[in-house]
Image 1 (cartoon, rainbow, N blue to C red):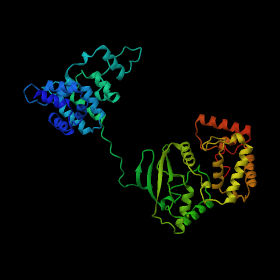
Image 2: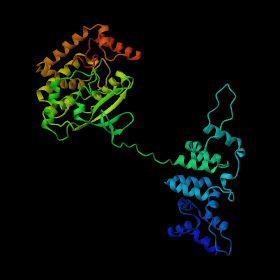
Image 3: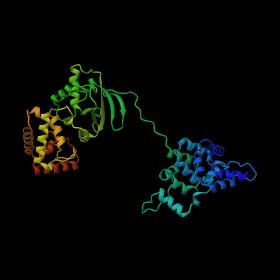
Amino acid sequence: MRSFLIGWLAGGLAAREREQLVGKIAPAGTSWLSAYLDQLAETDRKQLVEKFSPVMEVPKPPSVNAIISQDPIKALEILRGASVSQAEWQRTFDTVKPSNNNLTWLQTHIVENLTPTQRSELAGHISPPPPPPRPPAPAAPPSLEDVLAKDPVKALRILQSAPIEESEWRKAFEAMFPAPEPAKTVENQQHPLLGTLLQDFGYKQVYSLKMSQLIDSKVLPVWESQRSFREDRAKKIVKAKQTDQRFGVFPGVITLWSDANSKDAKVYKILDGQHRVGALRILMEEGEVKPDDEVMVEVFRLKGDEEAAALFTEINQAQPVKLVDMPGVTDAATRVALEGAAASLKAKFPAMFKTSERCLPPHLNVDVLKDKLFQADVMPRFKLTTSKQLLDWMLEQNVKLAERSDDEWIELRGPKGSSKKKEETFLKALIKARDTEFYLGSDNWKWID
């Protein structure tokens, strides 16, 4: 019988026979033992048979504890290498957990039995050196989950001789296989001013706001530092929407903000989208949209005008395609005039133009300049029809900016309360503008408005 079993195992187990063997020696949930048996060499099979199969007797299947006790670390590595679920981990642990009648490798030795090398390695792995000059205090022993979180296999090799409480062992499993946190959900929360809360992202909230609330300037005023509102630009948006309504009222969102530093933090202002809001007001007056129609708005809580200005800049610099470059937006003559004037200005001040659209003052980017000129309706407002007329107009604005004193520049540069570092940066940019006699990149586009 013994020789037959040796030959049977040495000759290789078929898949069905291996599953039968695993079913006899391992409870449900320990399918990792199949991977362990796959790695047994022929001599290992013989040793397994000789150890657990008495001569002339029907071999008794070894217990899971007996197999793990031969090489627990190897078994754990096989188990960790497999894509096992937390439930399977738990079932395996329930099979091999320590008990009073069955001392496993977890209860063999105590921490004092660690060699000096092991103790030093463990201390260096999980404990930083004590700060001098105070004498080092006895370090509290780390919890098993902390050790496993840093390097599970290495820590288990060091601590395999130490006693580990069952509660710690369970915590370790939970630390290695944490349950996923439930997604944060919003259930129709209503804001008295902003409408229905759709989603709270932490750094901002998104609401569905009624049109009548959005267009009421007493309820939602425009941020004071926004560029001036132009009725003709809003009418241009209205005309475009009346021609093409494939994408609803407006794609995207209107951006609002409230000042977290203000005593009245419940005051909200329009940070980006004032011309779209103006267009909505016209559309409502003409009956194109209804007061109860809803628009999506995003709300940020910011710390003063400086953060608001930074967010406004980021929003308006993140446009992947400039409006002037979109097909069908402008006629060929206007496009040629914008291209020619921008190119001529760059040729006159080459050092003041950068390839990056996010260049810092006093520099400009050609594509951004064209788009700003187009969106501000500079050519129709000032009755300019050629690139030369547009170039002369920009040079005239540059001369006006050059006449400002340093005090006037500082007074008009933007929100008050900026940091000292930002003031120094602004003054350096102003000095460079004076040296090059180019000021159009220093005024935050106010010269266009």
